[in-house]
Image 1: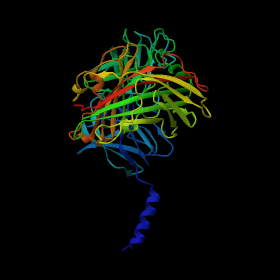
Image 2: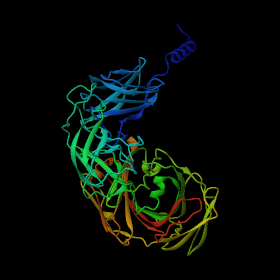
Image 3: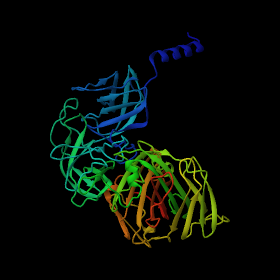
Image 4: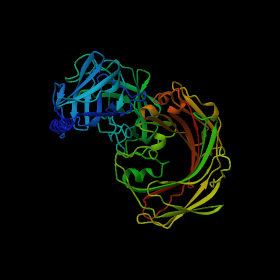
Length: 552
C-alpha cells in the first residue's frame, strides 16, 4: 500500500504530466453576440446559435479555428457535450483556445435547463448549467462587448459598407443586422447554412420606432450567424448612437446596439452634445458636474427612508479617434428613445463597464475650489475616484446634521491645473429641483406594459434623463435602461420592449435591487467651457431623484 506522502507526490506528478483539467467559469456560457448573463430574460442560448464558453485550460494555448465544412464535433482536441438527463448532443466548436471557446448549439439540443461540459485531451470539465430556448437573438457589437455600435451594414446599389459614426445610414435605407439566435434549422448545423427566412417572428426597433423587416434567416457566410434585413423608419431619429433592438417570438428582447443615422449619409452629428465631436474625432475632453441626488427607499427596509447627497463629479480624458466610439452616458440616445445595457455584476455598485478602448485619464491637478453663496470649499482630487461627496442629509438618523450645500444658485469651480489640464474657472447654475409627480404610484412595475413617468418644474430647454433597471443578486446580473425625454416635456413612456429585458424581482426583496432615477441637467448657459489642454469641455448642474422599485 502506498504511504500517504507517496500518494500525494504521485498524484501531483500525474497532474503535471496530464495538465490541469478544463474548468468553465461560473455562469461562463453566454450568447456569443449579446454576452447577456444567464440570470436575465435574454440570457438563454438558442438552438442553432453561436455561444461562448469562458474558463481556463479549455483548449490549446495556440487558438484553433474551424475553416471548412463540414464542421466536426471536435477541434484542436476539444469537444463539447450538451446534456439533459439521458439526452446528449455534441456542440460544434468553431474556435478553441485555453480561455475561450465559440461553438454552435445544435438545432436539436434539448429545450429547458441543460448542462454544458468541455473535454480537452480526454479530461472533462465541470458541468455548467445553461438554459436552451428556441430563439434568443443577440446582435454582434463592434467591441465584442454586447453593447455600443453594432455590426450593421448599410445596403447601397454599389456595396454594403459597415455602419459607423463616419458612415451612417439614412432614413428609408435598407440595413442588415448580423447576430445569432434566430432559432433552429431543419437540416444539419455542420454544413453551409440554408438560404431563406426562418419561421421565427422578428421585430426590429430603431430609436424606439418599429422598422419594417424584409428578411430574417441564416447568413450565407457562416454557420450559426443570422442576418436580419430591415428598412430604417422614415421618421427615425438622427444621431450617432441610435439604439437598435430585436424582439423574437413577441417576447424575447435582444441586447441593444447603436447605429448612426444622418439625413444624407454624411458623418453623424450630435448638436445637443458638445463633447460628441471631440469624442468621435479624438482629442482631450473634460466634464464637470454638480448634482444633488435624492433617493426614496421603500423596498427591503423596515420603514421608508429618504437620503440626499451633494456630489461633485469630474472627468478629464484623452480619447483616440474611433469610428465606433462609445461610452454609456456620453453616447446618449436621441431624445425620445431608450438604450439598454446588460452585464454581469451589480450595476448600481460598479456602474458601467469600461469601453472596449478605455481612454487615458488626464491629471487635472491636486484640488478644485467650489465657491457659492455659502463660501469656498476646497476639494482634494482622489486619483481612484472621480466623484467627491460634498454633503449628506439622512433624516432617518437622529442627530445627523444636514450637510447639504448645493442649493439653487450660481457656483464657480476653479482649479490651478495640473500636468495635463491647465488652470480654469467654470460657472455653473444650480436649478431649482423638479417634482416627480407619480413617483409613489409606479411600483410595482409591470415589465410587460409601457411605463409612463411624469414630472413638473423642468424648464423648456432642459431634458430629463431616465435611468432604471434591476440587479438580480443570486445570478449577479444586471439589466439597465437609459432614456432621454424631449426638451421641455413633462412625461416619458418607457416602452414594453425595453422593460422586457429587466429581470423580475425575487420574492425576497433583499435579493433584488430595482430602482428608477430621473435627472434634469442645465448646461453652462450654452457657452463653451475653455480649459487649457482640452479640446472640448462641459459643465453641468442639476438634480437626480430616485426611488427603489419592484419589477414584476
